[in-house]
Image 1 (cartoon, rainbow, N blue to C red):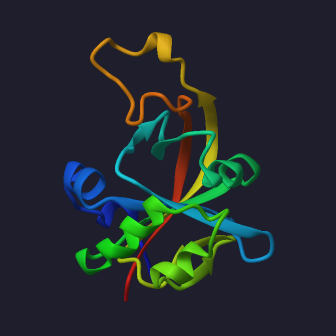
Image 2 (cartoon, rainbow, N blue to C red; image 1 turned 30 degrees about the vertical axis):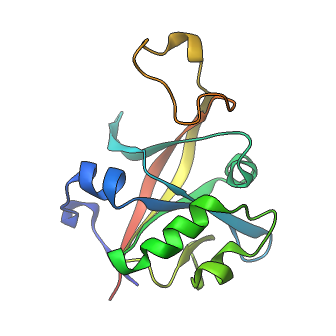
Length: 165
């Protein structure tokens, strides 16, 4: 992977995040990692820091890794990896080696984990985390799988961006 400046990024976030999806991964080579597919997140600037914001339910295995690690990655893939993203969104890392079963090869960079097949990777440092309060949501905003526990919001400062070279 080749590191690029965040200023070199140019894409439609509604397409990239909402339609192409991404893998949210936390953990490292020494202590293990887990990944999950997500199609919701936000990029922007928070008090002079470039950030990526995502939300994770406490029932997800990745949540445990997000809680105990300072770093996480947001990895985007070409369309040919859609089956791998579908698999990682449908199975738990508690029950199987998701990366292997999905045909993805872990790549350990900057003290965290991504995948060799990713076309774009954001390495993030967790700077804020808070449980969402469902009572504060607008009436017309209902989380996916509404009967499951509400998500926790994680804000990560984007430290580096990598593209496939």
